[in-house]
Image (cartoon, rainbow, N blue to C red; front, side, top):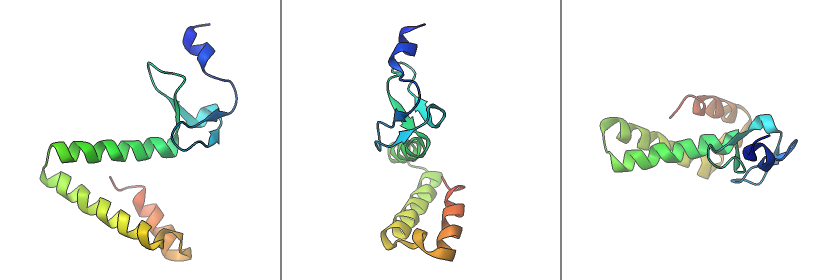
Length: 99
């Protein structure tokens, strides 16, 4: 057993980002810090934030297009449209394929 194995609790794990409890299959561990676990939804959120930061540091036409998508996503969330019965399902499906 390695030191990393001893620091990861078996069974349910807590996401360090949202605080939710998840099974070990639904938690991603950080390489040098296996005690830190992030759920898949938070990992996706963090990936989007990392791309946003890179876009700020290195402007390009693609970065501007992704900024437009982010502003659209923010608009949808601020109005709560993703929670509506029919259009919400469509918006959530589209969101899976957007940067």
